[in-house]
Length: 112
Image (tube, rainbow, N blue to C red; front, side, top):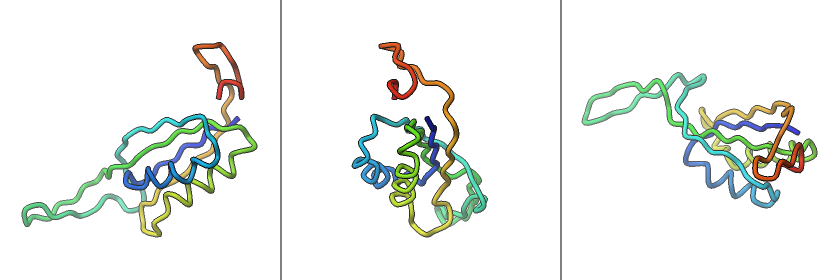
């Protein structure tokens, strides 16, 4: 099992969900986040004054998948989140040691 974590632009969430829908995933966790990467924030103009925001709004997705689906999920997220501009985001894939469904007590891939 793997945990796929993606940090994307908030306005691309629906596009990513649409790209993931055909894969039949059982669910994902979506969290509003703020952060920055190489772009180090952005300059904005408000009422004629320019100011820099250091932490940009982001959306964090967490998806637990079977090992056989990892590549498909990563490709779908890339497709849905891509704009070609700086700040599109990152995808991290890590091993998921154990999963338990609280309601039924199912474990591992049965819990996904």
